[in-house]
Image: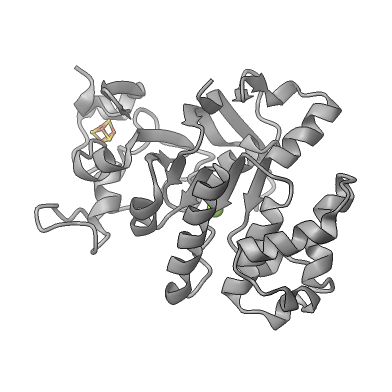
Length: 317
Ligand code: SF4
Ligand code: MG
């Protein structure tokens, strides 16, 4: 199969308690389906709280999805993996975090941090492999004896990338990998990720709210709003033939990619709570072109072009 990941009807519900003690449900990911091709960079974009990080973590098996969800990794359903298959999958699918400081143990040296995956998976030759990893991410081996706090943000993120690469993964979920870094460092790390992808034939699920970075790095993009994918297409179509009003509003606020023909759309109103999404189209409370039907009928997520999918009544004929 040319798809590394096939996701159908993925749902992830959390049981939550509001400050006043009331119990409720939060469907962070609500019936999402898509595929990721081997070797591509597939981006998930949306405002914070839209469910993109939850989706990324669920795909890695870090959260158990709701019953009825299907996640096929190289054709096999990870949701009912045996213990040994789960362990093997843990090598093949890795995560790069937003904040490298938060995920590197401050009391361990870089060497100890990088040796850890080899210990966990009982793999020999870790010492030789970590030198190679340092080289791959552009860090001199003298950094091996340092502690995370002795390194810059960009250097720490390189360590995070090296650790993700340790066990020869096929898929890497990059969750806002540069948004905690200085703008001047962001491009270096993005270029590194692109070089590594070519060298190692990696597939990326790239999670970001930064539409300039997404424009630079993606092959295809899915836009999420309140737990649902509302538009999914190639990078070029998303930016040039935008269909969904929510995507249009996101893009119109990015100065360096929006040309003068793009009309500025400023959304009013807050993002509704994902634990109590609006009826009908979830975006209708903020949509500048909402119609009556949008308040009551949820638009299906349908194919609107040869490589384009969207859920909006304006595009349902
Ligand atoms: Fe706006 Fe209606 Fe389309 Fe939703 S379905 S995005 S409310 S036009
Ligand atoms: Mg997030």
